[in-house]
Image (cartoon, rainbow, N blue to C red):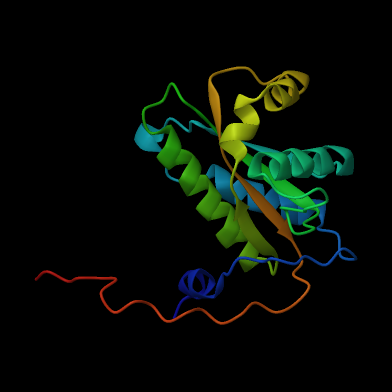
Length: 176
């Protein structure tokens, strides 16, 4: 089996990251670069990636995400990941949701290929529709009609990933 297929079969969501192992700038850039090569409708590249390694902003995003989730005080929805890759997409492009989703998939598979754990954390839509998110975008000089697609939390896993669940029997139907 080729390496790409192995990565796709072995990638699992990481729900506990190692706080003692920082991710190198080189690996962060490589994962982000992979995200930029995701397919997009008519090649419009409607998505954007915001790579957050700043602990203060990362923690503020976590707190806001937990609030949107309705979680108890102190809940850590990013599972301690040191890097949060926020994917946004331009709602003025008809395929924005699909474009952003494909970016998320590329980010997670690229992280796996580099030995990093990853997980897709939701609630980016609500986060960036709020004043909290709009203020972040304004501070970063990002303007436009963007929707939050997801947060790709990455870092080194604190424990090995569990084995994949068996695939359902009727997942694929072949028509010849």
